[in-house]
Image (cartoon, rainbow, N blue to C red; front, side, top):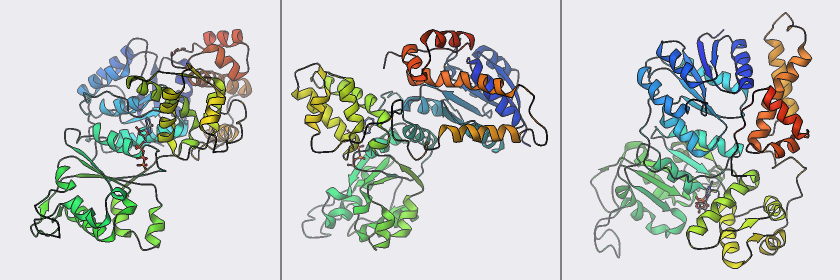
Length: 488
Ligand SMILES: Nc1ncnc2c1ncn2[C@@H]1O[C@H](COP(=O)(O)OP(=O)(O)OP(=O)(O)O)[C@@H](O)[C@H]1O
């Protein structure tokens, strides 16, 4: 049975109750509080082996508290939970030294697993904080489950120099993710150099990457530096890596193995200090079978695979992305537009073969070509006329479930209940279970509905199918905190 004392801070009473029970069942001792001041007092008194904290607390934002905790107790692992769920939340959590970031709502089983991992890691390894970058642009938009997973992976990768392989259809944001890895990673002071293998004539790729000596081939009238040299101390992004010719692959493999290379026509080995991020929209395993890609190179590059899902698998990101692109085009001098409900429905049912890039281009076209402020479904139909739309989604279901969250709600509930019962081993839980379970699920369910509707109680009541006054009363009784966001 695992052991250890956990300090839990969240101003949401329902969340405290649920986490308290799950962690106690897993064998931990839990102390919980609704505010940052108490958490800080406990930490300063030397209590607790691990901290779990929400970001937004009534008296202080946990991101301000984290550096102070890290200063006095650098080895204390901190798990941060947040309902904000943006790329910057994940990055900030990582920069301020959090051990792990969990976007709300999360699976209790996952939380218990993360706690177990945090407590079993070697004690003398501080989970050091990174200085915050100056640049606070939010380059990645989207709060779907699939993007949350990407943000968490990126946050974990920030303090490392690991080679990353990004896969995904064209236009899913592979280059943007590579850039985010660089901009928020430890090489951000160095250069970011992107090379697209498909855009360079095959016979010139080796010289482009590694440089060439004067006279190395016909037309090489002077020595030329390669992309490796230009990316020294920074990140080299190798886009469309599946299009790299075999000879260049062999040279690249040598660099990855030995940390040095020679220019085309050169003899002297040049040491290199470059972080490689590669991307492809092809299935490299198929290319390996066809003899077009070296398997040993694949394994060297695929140290951390990141898969960017196509836009049709995360249609709930479309409203945020569309808004983001309208803001961008406004900065370019084009008019910002609204999309009416019908237009949004069409966008969500479109297949998006060109993914986010296609959406960006559509927004630019809409902003440039249509004088009206509100874009209707008919306009979208006219713009997207060549592609059939997907069938409408049943009400209340924003998107096709992605692979990761395809588990049905009843399966998840059943799993939790089984866990709950098995926690009692040979005995039974205390009587009154029916009402207790319904009470326990009420808080998180209402909390999730409010989070999904960004604190809009009217929409949350509709989503839940309850009367607005009933919802208001429940929010009061359960002491739920409603955070309203203007972005709807
Ligand atoms: N999550 C996102 N948030 C905001 N903008 C995005 C996002 N994903 C992609 N974009 C934008 O969409 C466009 C295409 O993205 P990007 O070039 O990174 O895709 P890609 O997968 O590298 O495409 P390709 O495989 O064709 O090279 C870019 O303008 C990028 O800024």
